[in-house]
Length: 339
Image 1 (cartoon, rainbow, N blue to C red):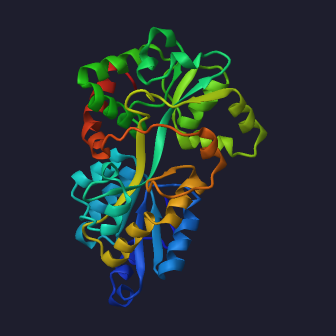
Image 2 (cartoon, rainbow, N blue to C red; image 1 turned 180 degrees about the vertical axis):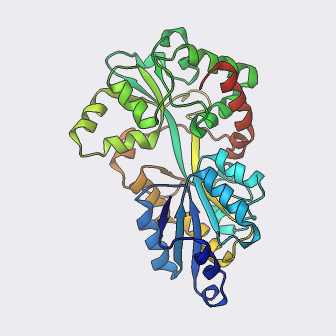
């Protein structure tokens, strides 16, 4: 467990509830994001508003269980995480209150939010390929990954990971359950090895020739592009990036996002934080610091890796739809043996 600013022990929870501290301008943030670049953003929020952030970082499921156990006495004001499926899970548990912000509604496209939670950054699920062994014309779409041409060529992380669940959830929405299951079965038949590791591990495996292609969130590749380590630059030299489905629905997008918790003791601070996350300054932190794309389309960023990746067509499937299909996606992965 990583504690930031304060340790939310039983004692500190009691202190947070005391009348004296209730007068302070504070925000109690439960975060499942684990990026050092967010530190600067939180400091900027405090500088702009005078609101101190008390933060606890844990894994998503641990945080959700903690919030449920704390109940009405929870000190948590805002919960933020990555992936629509995780936000939907919190929503299904009845943990969020409606955001109710005209600023959020005006700045975030409707397909990237729900009444109770909103995206504040986006990431694309791209195809990474080995330039020495793979013809990029053979993998222009996600559907091509299930082609017999890709036999023994695919590396993947677990099918139970939310990034892959959301991708399959999008294919269910576009093609229906039957075709989505046929796709998943075809991809499993093309595995070079059993799923293991994270997205960066898949990228390195493709560069090493262990497989020919992999699916990865875009910011993992951008992170390697910006690395000063010679070994990372050597990895990048061997690889190409494909924006899938540019002639159809566009590349699958997922989000980082969050919402105000129903029992938030500092609701005014929580609302200011949510509105700060969609401000130009915060949006640039997500893009320039962590290689994510802004959820606010008008924001200009200064990230050489994102610029080098170029323009692309993004899938505008409503993000809540991904969350709705996540459970079915897991059942399909289980049925086809995508462990």
